[in-house]
Amino acid sequence: MAQIEKLEHSKVAIKLECDREEFDKALKSSYNKNKKRFQVPGFRKGKVPYQLVIKYYGEGVLYEDAIDEIVNPAYQEAVKENELEVVSRPELDVESIDENGMKYTLTVTVKPEVKLGKYEGVEAPYYKREITDETVNADIDAMRRRNATWENVEDRPAKSGDKVNIDYEGFKDGVAFEGGKGENYDLTLGSHSFIPGFEEQVEGHNVGEEFTIEVKFPEDYHAEELKGQDTTFNVKIHNIKEEKMPDLDDEFVKDVSEFDTLDELKADIRKNQEEAAEKDAKNAFINTVVGVVADNAEVEIPDAMIDNEVENMANEQASRMSQQGIGLDMYLQYTGQSMEDFKAGMKPMALIRVKSNLVIEAVAKELKLEVTPEEYEKELEDMAKAYNGMTVEDIKKAVGEDNPYVKESIINRKTVEWLADKAVKTEPKEEESNEEENKEEKEG
Image (tube, rainbow, N blue to C red; front, side):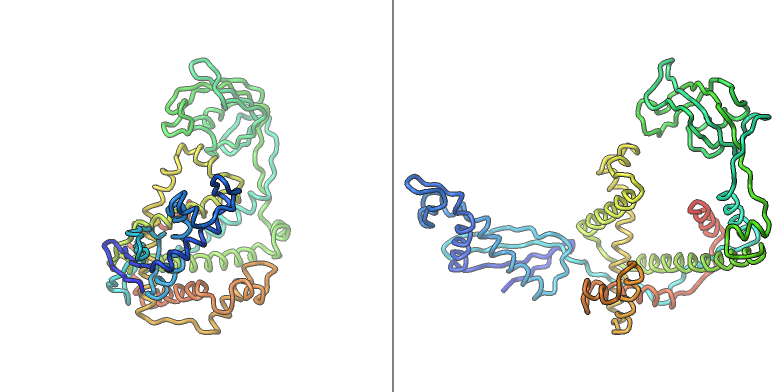
């Protein structure tokens, strides 16, 4: 029977012991597993008797596997019996091995206790961006740009918005530097894809011109040898192209959409923008409500939980980057970060995520929320829709009829929806509205 002792910082000591008979049985099991390793004069390798191995090597040679055989099942049983929610790997301390058997302690970190503050009816600002003729026209202009053509320009110098085809070579103190040369490179002026000041100095020059420009590399540039350095570039313009937008008429609408008239297209864009604005406002409100509820709660977050969440976040980001063809090592090299820096930057957000999840879980327990069979079935249907080609039966075979993680996901969502439904919407302050608008512009 395990003895449970609560320690500071959400740690728990699980004290266990086994008698000598059980320990001797584990030693013999360890011997059978490892006997091919032992060699004693007069015996073939792997044929040394158990007692002779003990006499010749000492029984300590069998301890590692014997201890594992005893500890692992006992630990799992203790966790289950005492309903411990463990969030870290156990740390083993073998206190004694003698004629009475073995005494040992496993120290683990468990989920911390959450002391909820106010969670029903909290106040949070609600902001929904305004949909106007300008926002609708911006989407239409984007459609026109996607269908634009590029025509050669011969009778004027390059200007912002043009696409120029250039040769360039960079020099520092008169010496060409690595990575500073390109030939027949297409550069859109005003795109800010080159070093600050480069594109602006290309403007005003004509096809066939060769010229020199001076630029200073940013202090935070990824290449150490170029940070803050003054450089010159020799540039030659091969051609200049300007963007020709298609005429905005019903014929254009028919070419790019399922609609026949411009008015129909505008009405559809407005409807979609309204729905997106409503969805974004709801999600932002929900996130703010959860943040307020979390701020009202008291909980000491164990380092192990933060570290686990950082690992999850790092893996998520690495997966997203790999889908774009960018390896994590390449990203770290480009940004000049170490893996430790990369993960350290994630800790503040990891702390927020962990605390929010713990608080949502605590609220769900207070509300005694449960999952109905209908809700579980619908969740599986939604999962099947998310994975193209899979049926509900396929999902059931994969996750089972009563998967605890699926249920936890449903309960968490129900909890968040409950908190949002009970929350009080307030008018956002002007600076909050501006922040939301700026965020949407950047994301757009």
